[in-house]
Amino acid sequence: MDVFTRSIRGWQLSRSLDQGLTLAALERALVSTTPELHHSDQGVQYAATAYVDRLLELRVTPSMAAVGEPRENGFAERLMRTIKEEEVNLSEYRDFDDARRQIGRFLDDVYNVKRIHSSLGYLTPCEFEQQWRSPSPATKTTTTWAEDRAPVGTDPSADPGANTDPGGTMPPSSDRFGTNAINPRSLMGYLKKPESVVQF
Image 1 (tube, rainbow, N blue to C red):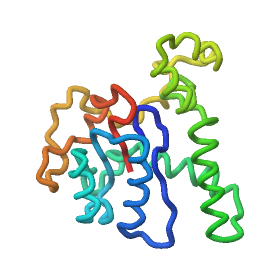
Image 2 (spheres, rainbow, N blue to C red; image 1 turned 60 degrees about the vertical axis):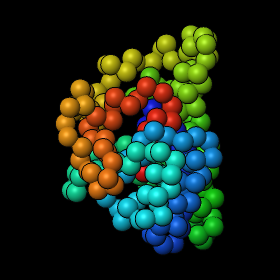
Image 3 (tube, rainbow, N blue to C red; image 1 turned 30 degrees about the horizontal axis):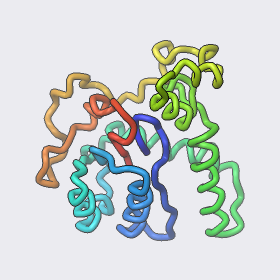
């Protein structure tokens, strides 16, 4: 997930939870862009040598949430909840391939293109990114009727709870990669442009 736009950049479905799964999702995300920061939970697949080496090769700063702190990975946790509530729990899959096809359709065609987000001013990830990249954002807002939606500042659900240290003064939560990993609580400082932070 690109944290700035909430767009799903790369995903993969597998029968096993190994580094091949996460590497495939990472490579899929890298087709469109290379982030400045990669944030994840403490899953062993994200600390696998091949995975970390790929990030470092691209000069991407790896960062991990502290052990037992799911709030530090709130964007990904919320995404998983959304996928379960809005796709998996409402579907009956014939087999693994059908599940992959339907979940892919949900992520690519519904979540990114049709599902609005309060934190994006009630725009979809695609609308928000198009508006951000557009030289005249007012025209994009008019076509989506965003002016009739509540402003982000008035919506309590717009705060993902990740910005408890807006100045970014807290020490890194993880230095396990030999880099100055970014504390997840200061991720908001990176949210200046699309593709700056990818969270898995």
